Image (cartoon, rainbow, N blue to C red):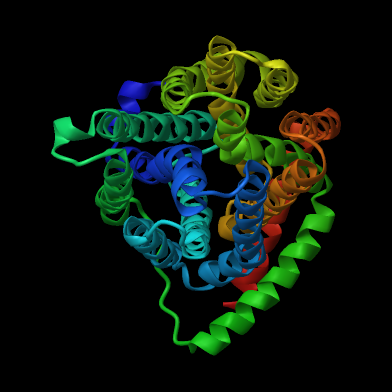
Length: 438
């Protein structure tokens, strides 16, 4: 993978800058300041069991909405080639609701949860169409590298703004702010501005095939549902792709649950807010080079699937270790471990999937990909939430290990070459059918 070449390629760099833009939501909002502020400010006076469950269930609800919408939206967008338009729609939802968190007062946990849920919908929904644009700027030979470049840019961009936000929270008076509470509120506005600003190059420079459609919105929706049904049928014939999606459903469930709830877990086992912020910084800046390293090691030498399996193995070790961690130093080491595996698993999964789907219907298939990812993000937090209500914090995190084991076991049976061959055959069939219908 030639990073310098990607930096010089206007289309690839503009596409990757969207990851740079919206990763600030994942870092500053999901992983850090929302869980902290939700526990200490919006749910002031409540027990840790109640706040943990509320946060887990809110995350699950938002993910459920995106999971239901994802395949339908993908199918509709492919009908009119409106990936960028849909991306703008979800981007607007995410940016607006993230900024609105600034104006939510102490004790208003219901409003905070609602805004967070809509912010998550905006973040996750926009990623459906961002992922689908990958096929327009890459091919089978470059897709692993371009996908990893996007993730690495996300970790770097999200990490840089998080550094600034963390400094304002730790030293608010140095930035002209009254206290840490006001600094956290300012961080929400900063994320919204950053997200919106760095999204602009994607809309200017990333190509998307244009097709004029005279159909009404209702007709387009009907076609979208029709193509959704067709995609279900196609997946039944793409047995390797289907098996990979089931595997992905399990292991990405574990990854997303750790990403979204690890901060809450840390606070509830006694990790200080300052140490937690340092841990999140470590994850970002360890993940940046490690994502690129994953591609360098696994893209050409050992294979994408081996890379994913290696990352899953790392997460199993991390989850078991989290159960036993009892010092801030150990938690710092845990953060380094998460950073070393997170980007590699996410990036390789996306690029692996892009190789085993028809390239002339990417949004529909990425709709399913994101749907399963979001359904996973429904069940993981729900498992965590119920376990927290009836057991303890440590038992809740340990329960996530079963997801990695199941996902890894199924992935062993996925044959990449058979998956590619079947996808190329279906690609030809789709093109022939569309050509006959033209």
